[in-house]
Image (cartoon, rainbow, N blue to C red; front, side, top):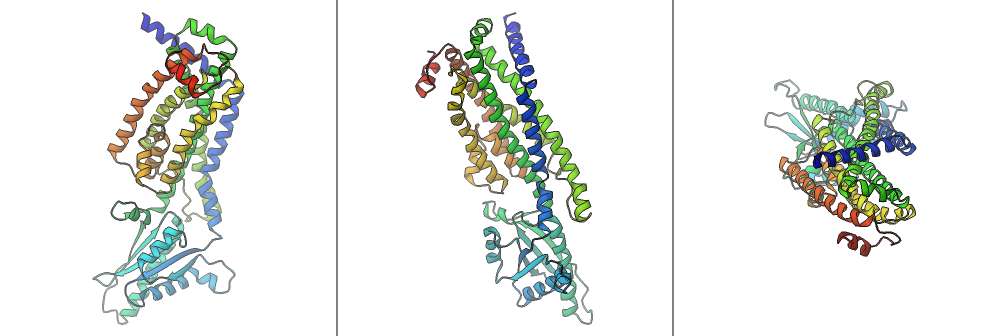
Length: 437
């Protein structure tokens, strides 16, 4: 009976918070703002592709066989830039530069001096093997052009070496590899699809930015709600009708449901924008430009992981904000704790951006296990597809263990903080509340 009453009080508080938040002007305004931001982020790849039309992709060409790199560079330039160099006024698409070896060319790609490097090898059957290294800077349509150019190089190389067609033609092989994996400590390179990689990055950016903004924003909602109730003396009535645990858990649950509702309202237009970007790109750039919707990485598993990390991350940050808000007596004091509480989120946001850029250093791996940072960093790593199963279990497990612990501490602070008036927020005030007064 007592447990049922406790659960009923929690749901009453949650329902009150949910209705109050979803009916507020701040909810409507922030929903429109976040939805607009998500749509802009979703259309960034199309904007980049449009800008790429006027840029020249600088590509290195290397080969161990003497003279092969120079011949291939000349053929590629003639075949892919022939219209531009023929006096028609068209803009060149590629700038091919011969490099002495593959290591130097790959290093130039990592330094940003080149978009990609193309290594050419001759197989035992006489056919050519083309391997292109890049770090996500080579658009899918230009990778396809390079593949067509590689075929032309193979044909001319075969006719030059076999004027009488004494040897059958061997179709050149063409691979695009992710150059970042060679320096990530994985022990080698991995096959790389430029379109899929771009899709994963843009989905990861949407999830990371949305998580960062919403967790901090909803955390402030929790803190501001507690401060408003305390400053208006409503808290004294609430604390007599419900326990501190019921109030804290109810607030976290109610505002969390409001947050999930808002996230749904934000993700829907973003997904529609991704779907529309393909048709817009086909209309502006042609059907072969590779501007299809960036939804290949938006798998059910990734969506489930986002929901899990959002729920657990919100519960963690909301508990922190609830405890901190109970120590404040005036709404004007909210800014004094807003910045310190947002620092952990900011500290996790930057490693997440590094993870989205392809980095998989030890620092980023460790950051993806830290509960305050894992909702951002691990989501970024999942988006680019570089997570082992045990890493995901460890990250979620640590977060699951941390949330109730922090919630219990927040309840203890809340119980003592709501009856503290006129004391400025400070580490000493927090410690007194944590000790129970």
